[in-house]
Image (cartoon, rainbow, N blue to C red; front, side):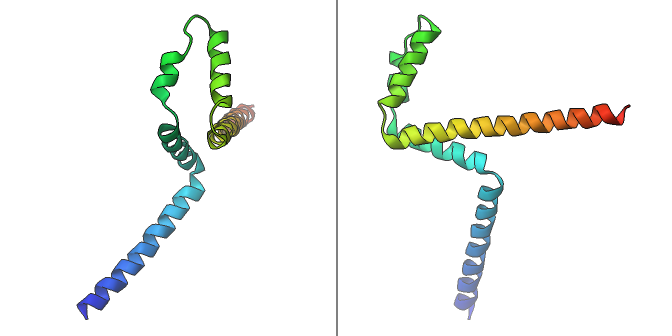
Length: 111
């Protein structure tokens, strides 16, 4: 009897944890995307070697090296980098729009 109760409790709690994790991932995709990007980057790219070989004389040579390094990686890393930049741009635009909208509401409410 107790074993059946513990099995039922474990199954119910597993469903609750699954639903909670799903809701967190749906509501906060930025954290999930950042975690996936960091995990795959650390397992696929030797960041120490990239930073060691990075030119330090000026910005344009460092930028050109970064572009060549990105183009020289596997396609999955290229997709993750592109997705990361798209997500950063989207989040920045959303935050900027939100801040502008708050400032405009504040401005109109004082008139």
